[in-house]
Length: 390
Image (cartoon, rainbow, N blue to C red; front, side, top):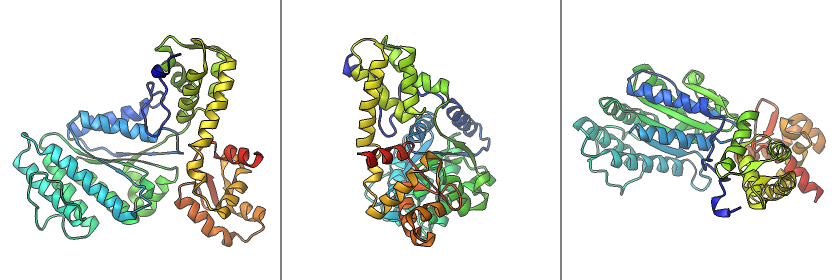
């Protein structure tokens, strides 16, 4: 089959041809967009789950929905190991300036132009200048130097101006658990205030399974601010659609045993479906996928995962951290008791605290509950087991 027509798209945040099984989340966000237009209050959205389940794909879909509705959309990612919190806040300022420049068009009224001055003041206070959005700084507004005060004033001004045109302000935030504590607290405080005062400002965020806990630790009312959706492996029918529909568009079909073998290998995880689908397209000589094709594709797809998806986390670990992860792999995907891990290592539990903390900060593991840890990547335990057998 022709490689140029391969309909599968493994990759971070890349939208598959068939975005199966995520209709409830898309419909919920679409309803939120409609409510903004009608000036009816609602809650933002938080997606949480392991890596490779399609959270970023969904956020990108939300961004497209909001942009089509002509709302002001700000995108941000929590991760920035190089520059830390200052670099993330600078990204926020640049995204605001870019969105502000886009909205300072012929239809922008006086109130919006004034609000954009507050946006410019906020960004300048964070040290980001050089992006001319066609307004002067709104001195005395959003420029106190307190992230919580300045964010509140800027969003109050922006959302109020946008509301006059039945528009709104939407923050799309990926890897939200990696934002610094001060920025998380500021965002939650403003979302809370916006809900009370019916400002058209909403956050759509995504992160690891521990994200709801991170938000609740920052502000106790966080659990009431958002619609929370756990994003995991696809249901059986959606996983089947994700595998079969893209190929069917080009007249390619699967023998039943080949389909079942590929779906079983993928575990229903969207990223793995795309990886195995891509491999089987490149492997099969005919337009009917056989079980022999599927077996070869699984081997090739697994090699690809072992060379890219898993090493991106494993290679960040030190020798001591890899030993910790090997002990975790014994328990599989369900998670490990830190007390049991210490027992296996022949160490005191307290002596492993630093290793646990650094692995969490590197995004390799997370803490689903007190005294427990689990991998952030599905299939990581099997990958480590394969490494130990080599």
